[in-house]
Image (tube, rainbow, N blue to C red; front, side):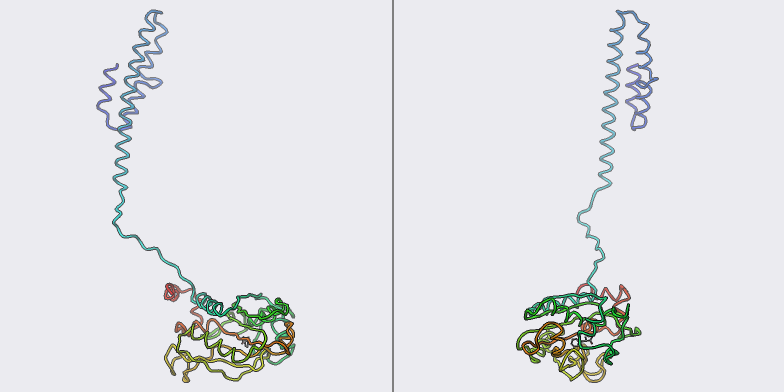
Length: 337
Ligand code: PHE
């Protein structure tokens, strides 16, 4: 039996055949098991002798099976490793890389520029009370200038804010008369406009407000000049045109030289070489008062600009809708900025 088994094992060269032989000799109905089962019929003297022999045979067969099994496993592992060899000299595969949205980028640039001038960044609610959006900004109910900003009303007293200016008042109140107040306020605003190349019912603004002692118009002008030069380049110029906002007096609109097309003639700048980028002015005494600052003692300036407009100018984008379409071929151009 032993030599049969060993002979058979010698010819085996896969794990399946090895298993079959194990069953054939050592299994429940295997040849050796049969013999052991028959031991009951043997005499007391024969039993230990035969038992000893049977155990030796089992041991020998098992040893060979185990040895073979290990060899098969080793071969298997080696085969797998050979297949899994990694060529470390191959160049890596590039993963598609995301980037910041151009509007996010411009807001971050704006924040960096103004934080660099000592401003803090504040925020306010997009769903706003009529009081902060209009009344506390010197625009009482039925004031004709409310028409400048067609609004989405939610109730009679609550609306989607039409500008970031309500945060001027909220900030002043939060400061409880302390000075200087010096914040910028980025955020979304909402107006009932029909969407087109330059209008969107929702867009972004950045507001700025400074309140303190002896704050003058020249401070506003210097601040804005510094800002545009950091944003658009060192040769950018600004010009202030008289304008009207109920919450500032005097009020101005501010133009920058049209850097993108290098002068007159591009679509954004029309023919003049100048393009408007923001509204600004000296904080109206009524607004200072409603914010808890005595206009006899304090003065301030404020400005508000559209982020999309800044981004369109900076990157030469001619349609505001590009910013909202999530078109990858558009967005990819900004991925590495
Ligand atoms: N809130 C004004 C607008 O949305 C801009 C502005 C802000 C003007 C602050 C003056 C001062 O048009």
